[in-house]
Length: 449
View 1: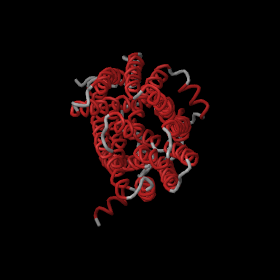
View 2 (view 1 turned 90 degrees about the vertical axis):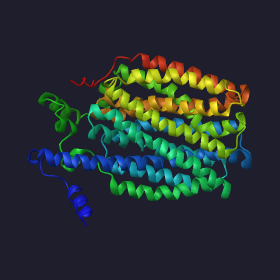
View 3 (view 1 turned 45 degrees about the horizontal axis):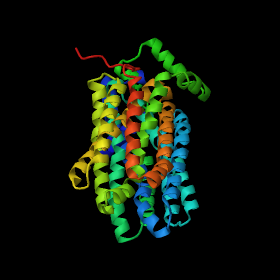
View 4 (view 1 turned 90 degrees about the horizontal axis):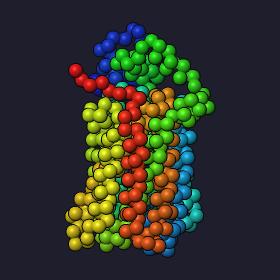
């Protein structure tokens, strides 16, 4: 009863900001930060459950329905193009939308198209539905960007971003292990049907638990709470609230050179990340000669490593590099090139070394993936954070599009070894792009006295 009363009180808009004590504000912020962060993690994990299930179903679909790698590659590429374009559009709209409704609608749509895919056999219909899934998937992360940048200051943003980013890995591990059980005991169709129904229920959970920015609850903004703005800066922030979509693009996005460096870097990050994400189960079976269960376990390690690597990258950028996200990303990408090369050359007689290299690939590729979003949100300013992060997502999924049909073409004509070689090149080029923003930061965190 006491817990319900507490939630009811905290769920009610507060008194005017000037009438609140610091204790009241701190207590409310603590409650809402925990509640919103937990909801974002569960909600975005659900998006991945109805997204990575397709890659686990691919080996069975190739065998049962007679599809070719090129056909599947075009499905992956179409998804990435639709997702990439939609992510920028969704990010721009999300800057002016209520995160609660935006995320719920996206998850409902993603769940619904998965149910259709579960009852389909036509490669054309499956491709259309997976492309529609890309559109709805693009509505998942912008609300996370909006809430994180409005509830946390620069000294906490990188670490908290890394924590919420763990939803990528949580959802991936759930479906990687769950898909094997569903395929073994039922069929590949259940990999779409069961998660589809489950995510319909989770969409209701997200709607019930999520709320929008602090001011929507009658709380002071994070800048006011932590004393991060002067009166002049507060007036400027108020003016930014009234920016049109055209002004956001032409004033905050287009002339922003560091942001474009991050975008191009993300293109190369996603060639590696989505190459493993989309083709991992097929690649491990054909190149390494392991069964689907072992492939699922190894890719789960890849995702778990990404969880740790992403969190550590956020923490390092906050506490050691004082907001300079480019430095951490550069170091990660350099070591990633060596990890991919190690996975490429390790012989089949040394399986544990191969698994370790795959583990390190996950650890290293997800660090820059986390920091790209943080850097974009900071370079774009809080009022255009979702649009800036959406633009980096667009470039990222152009890289994902290249890894879709590109991996299919290279693997079919030159083998999986050539595919890994292309991943090494992508990691090196990504590192060079991050090197261009080595000293750049919009909100440098001062050293502790």
